[in-house]
Image 1 (tube, helix red, strand yellow):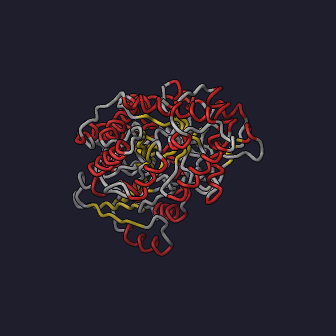
Image 2 (spheres, one colour; image 1 turned 90 degrees about the horizontal axis):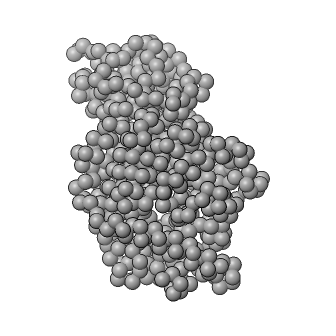
Image 3 (tube, one colour; image 1 turned 90 degrees about the vertical axis):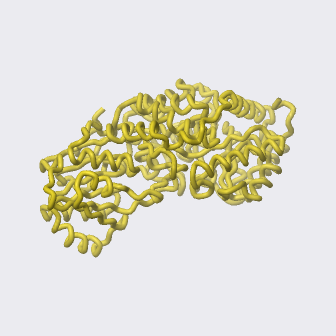
Length: 534
C-alpha cells in the first residue's frame, strides 16, 4: 500500500531514469535502482538499443533487478512513434509516421498502426510508449513536430490519435498523448529554449485542446507535458507548462477531466533550468501536478532531483498526501499493465502481417499534388536512363532518428527499370555540389529529386530550381514535410511521401511507374499554393 511506504520510496516512484548501456544494465543504473527505487526507465536509441532481441534481454534484466531490490515492476518506456522517431529501428516494422496516416485519412489504419506499435513493444518488454504525438501542426516553421503530427485539422488529428491510442493500448502497452497543451504552432524547439504560445483561450480551445480531449475520452493512460509557455493562462512571463499548475491542475485535471498519469517531457531540455537549478524546477513540476519526471542519463541529475524532492517534503514545500495520491495513480497504471501479463513472442517484431500494415499505409499516403508536365506514370524505354537525387538525412531535432536511415528509393525504382543511377548529396548542398551535379543530370532522360524540408534548406531548393530552369524533365518528391513546393512553386510535377522509411520509398517507386494509385490527400496546407484536402 502506498500509505505504508517511506518518503524516499514515494519520491522514487515519481522518477523515470535513463542510462547508457545496451548489453546489460550499467553499474550506475544498478546503483540508482538500489538507492532511489525509481518508478521506471526510459530507453533511448543511441543509449540502449541495437535490435529487438537485445532490447528484450535488457528489459528482462531490468525487471529482474527490480525484483531483486523488492521494487514494484518497472515502467519501461520509449519513443516508438513510427516515421521520424523510432527508438527501435533495426528489426522493427518501419511504420510510416502520423502525417502519412493523416494523408490516408483512415482511422482504421491508425488503429492498426497502434496495434503494431503496441504488440512489438510488448514483445520486447516495453510497457509504455511515448506516443502518439497529438499536436496540430499549423506552423510550417515548427522545428520539432512536423510529420510527427497527423496534420493541421484539429478534428482529424483528434480522430486519428484516438484510434492509434486504442490500438496501442489494446496490446497492454500504455499510450502517451503529447505534448500538452499543444506544440504544433511553435516556431522554436523546446530542446533549445522556451517556446511561447501567444494564442487566446478561444483559439486554444478550438485548435490545440481537442486532440487531448479526444485522447482522454479514448482512455489514454498518460499525457506528456510540453516545455512551452501559455500566455493566455499564465501571462506574459509564462513558465513552461510542465511547471504550471494553471495548465496541469486547473486545465488538464479539472477542466478536461484527465485522471491518468502526467509525465514530463525530458527534463534535460533547455526550456527547463539545468545544472544545480534542475532540482528546483523538478520540485516546481511536482507542485504543478506532474506525476512522473522524465530524467535522462546523467547520474548527477538523478541525485539532484531526488535530493531536492526529499528536502521539499521535509520542508513542507511538497505535501506528502498529495505525493501519495500521485503515486496511487502510478500504481494504478502499473496494475493496468500487470493485467496484460502475456508477452507476444519476439517473432511478431517485423513480421509479415505487420509489414503488410506498413506497406498499406505507405501506398495509401502517396499524394500527387500536381503533374502539369504529364510525366506520370513513367514510361521509359530500356535504353533510357533515370537519375535519383537524395539528400543524406539528418536529425533535424533531438526528437528524430532520420540519421539512422538511408532512403532506398533508387533500389526500389530498379524493380521497375534497370538503368537507375543514384546521387547522394549533402543535406545542405553547396553551389559547387550543385554545379557538379547539374553537369551529370543533363545527360538523363528523367530525374527524380527527393527533398527533405527544402522549404527551409536553401541548397536543396536552389538545386530543384536549377533543374527546372534547365528544362530537365524532373519529378520532385517531398520526403518529409509537404511545404517544400513553396520554395520552388514553378516545379511542374510534385508528390509527397511524408517519410523516408523503406515502405514509403517502395510505394513511391510503385506509384511513379503507374502500378500504384496516388490517393493520398494533403493533411496540411502548402502556403500560398494548396489548402489541406480533408
